[in-house]
Image 1: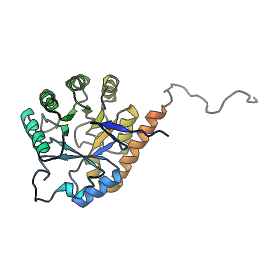
Image 2: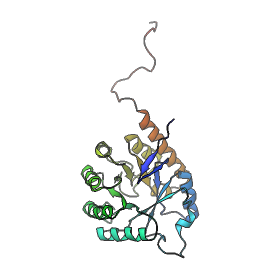
Image 3: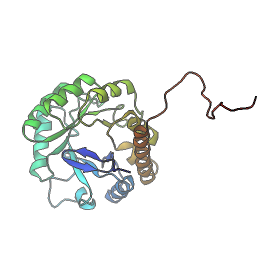
Image 4: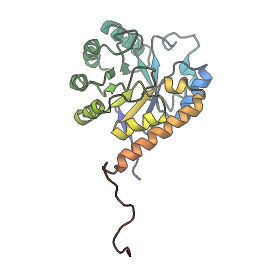
Length: 258
């Protein structure tokens, strides 16, 4: 079977599961869960992890950087200027130009500030960053960010860390229909079936953190998420049967003796 590769920022990947690095017991558990997930892209919060302070205990020292692409993110930023400054800091630290852009608009819901995200994206794309913006499940925002030059769009499934799964699959479908860049569901996935649903809709990848790190057995959940993403992607490629109101016999009726 032809390899089903995922392209992002000029590189190709086999895994369509992107995982975060927060909330684990320690760096050893983080590494074990990432390995079990099969993820080839790992997102790291620039402002919350020691990736820019040489000499401190560093998460990156515990990861297989020959296999993994680091995706720095601007988590914890509440203004466009904060996000831009954080992105520049990550690039100066040698992490690269691939960036998850996150500008939070509200402490309670952690929903993104879409106008600030668009403002920051415009500046960062002009500066040569490969920008992956975290947004609401808003088709108009997704379209505007694609027009700016973002390399993907990342609509939330539900609030960050909520585990509610995809609350509005219809908006996600609209975003998928109109987008010419990868669509990555980001935030709200709670278990493997949620990841499978996202992939069955046609999403290019799923990004998650809390669903693995907060599980009773993070390593086992990481493996479950890997299998959920793989199953959902295969189901999407296979093409599901149409939904029908009434039954259709599994066995042919021709030649049946009555």
